[in-house]
Length: 232
Ligand SMILES: [Zn+2]
Picture 1 (cartoon, rainbow, N blue to C red):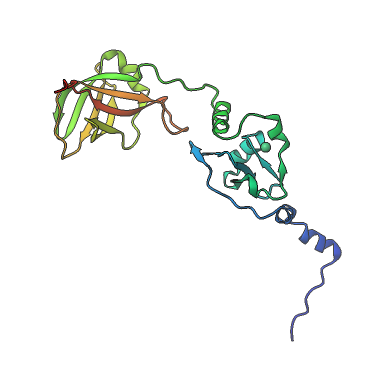
Picture 2: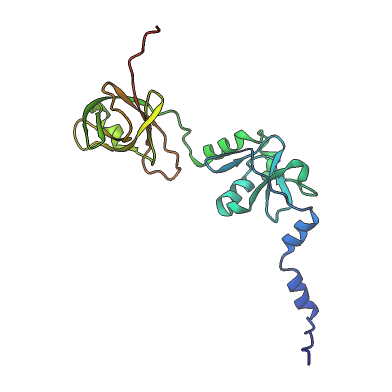
């Protein structure tokens, strides 16, 4: 004997139907068709000319990185989608976006980062530090910097796969910085096929790629500073 369907009281029915008002409403606004953003800057989606931000289940679209978008990115980044302006359906333009009339696109992520990181980042001073070879043992090249760079080295991290460049070739990988002694060192693991070049080197510093980095500087690369060959 089939179990009779239970009748829902009008009150319960209203509750059940009312559970996902945002979704129901969103369906009426036209299907959401996410596209890849024109670019990503440090993970932040950057709008192209014809693109806008939409938040899943939202009823508006955003032309700039307004506080609503920033808040969505902070709390539910997967709900922040990018779609074409032509595909917003019945969604209306966000009022907050109007109060932030700056151009969408590249400036949005910049703006966002200026908001969250109060100091805009100038290139680090002493971005290039000269190095001299002091030894080579077991495939590790020891390069020393002047003692005046010791403090800077203490504030510098080595990120994974930081390259050693020799004549435009990747000849090894920076292993670590050592600022324990007066003469701060850069240790580089040479590629087994690489031939060691004696001569001056330099280390190039930059700001770290990760926002969560604990040190203010990172090694961009180590380069052999070859003598300039005279033209034949
Ligand atoms: Zn907005």
